[in-house]
Length: 448
Figure 1 (cartoon, rainbow, N blue to C red):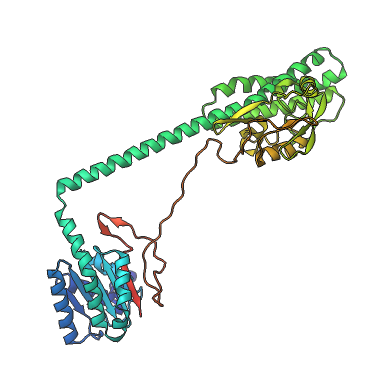
Figure 2: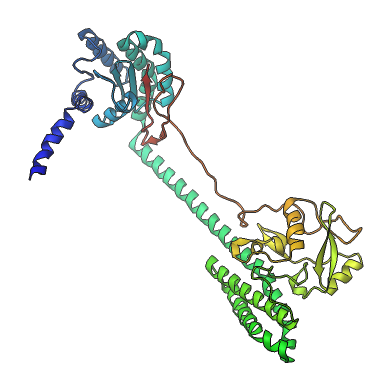
């Protein structure tokens, strides 16, 4: 009960503070007349008359204007006080708040730029005669305010409705086009992600096909490799069946994880058959297969491959690709679509961390060929003395969103109070329009 009894006292104390009391008194007065002069404010009776005459004249010119003269500078700043007061009384016009050494201007009809220009032009007068300077600012703003008022009055309700309907239809059409474009981009990106996993499916199938006869032949190495071979076989079947039916990113990632499980199991089985220790958990998934296309099968030798810079690198290749290189021919490189154009499979989406698959191929290709492919250059050559040509599709592959396109970022900045050295706007952030009127960035002025 004691706390409840204190509420009226606290409210009375708050309302009695100078800033709140002045704002409340100004609002009450300006709802019924054009000028308010607080007791003790920097305005005499003659100044009150000057302001009243100016407000009357400006209203007759089609520029409704009100003046509030306060005894002290508002704690929130004169511009913020003018903006709050104009909105509090619902005034469609220009309101000027005068206080010792400061002027705030808020208007529903005049742009922040015009307010700034008028304020800056009147600074010399404001520093010597606050009342005359404020009237000068109001008169400079009157032509634009009156012009905006005329345009507003001439607009018919039917025209406004038609305009609103047109804007709504245009906005809806743009939104619909954006949604359709985004859906097409997502669908294409998903299709490319599925296509990028096909070389892994073929690589796993190749390894299973090669390991199978050795497992069936029996023996101690085959017995040690059998569990991993069975795991690879099961993962292959699941991934092969799931990938064509993957209609969202989650399903594609699940298929990718199945492929990784199968490829690592096949690599362990291969190592057991060869009497070698199991590969590292983060070993390249397609290591040991032909660099140009995992579907070619196991690499039986290495060949020199030159990139655009002319640097040579040894890469693992299958027997068929080795023969083509020896004959001076270009091996067939497995391509996948990225951004609507074909690129080598190890430059596709499945080569990086976006699928969780990590590196696909060995250090030689991953550290050299892939780097040069992503860098630039017209193409690749193969073997000593062979180079040039169109290579693997050429051009520059840009990373990021493989689906193409992107989002545009934008920001807007706007009005605020003038800073204390009158050099420009302060850190306001909202100069948007609201129903034809200038919104929260409609104020200007400042201390002088």
